[in-house]
Length: 279
Image 1 (spheres, one colour):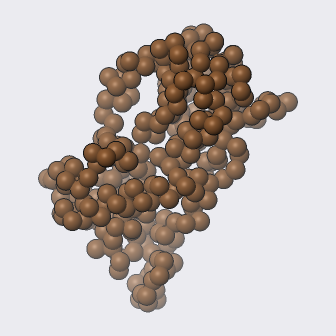
Image 2 (cartoon, rainbow, N blue to C red):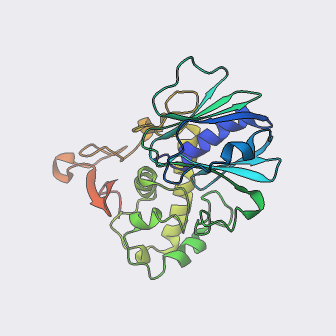
Image 3 (cartoon, helix red, strand yellow):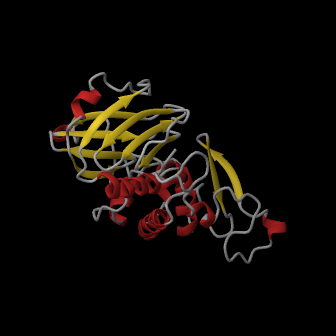
């Protein structure tokens, strides 16, 4: 699933491609996603102008001059492709084509776990989609005390807590492992045991790792590609994710004794960590 860095990368590409563009037409070849695309979706957004493009958690928001916003989530395998001119043949799983006076946006989603809808812009904050979304990692209100207060009396492992979108939004499985490694905190620690000082480290690591990933265009592990079809390259900068048995960066440990980077499963998700450097 595209996580915050991948969605932010797509948002930045859309800003360059369709900001202030006029929507000419919308073609929907398949509307059956985890939430069915409304029958009147095309009619409601055609002839409108895109005046804002933003990200909320892992959702893309395209604000229109008619008082509506396109809400776009890419699910597990969704991709947005940008073309100056449409290819002669559609690719398999190209489900939606949005034509603007600047370019074409093509929504491709093999598993169809994504969603595409339009909502009144003034109603976004009270919409159930966003009612339980936590603070953005780059919000200035996110600080050590904020995390410390959220972590109190929480007896789940810290790795699982980082995936809780109602606390801090946008952190997915890949980046949770990388953030904890950077902060030197074991994923096995109970959340309530994290000190205020360690919360300071976590805030720094959250922003540091996510920003590095954004700058690298995200991580291309499975299906993710940038809108121009190229791959992100943050996967080449991972310190622990998918590195089972290897040394972690600048490791001075005896891997023959420690076993190197370890992989465990927490709440059905793979976790990678260094048992020596993370306490």
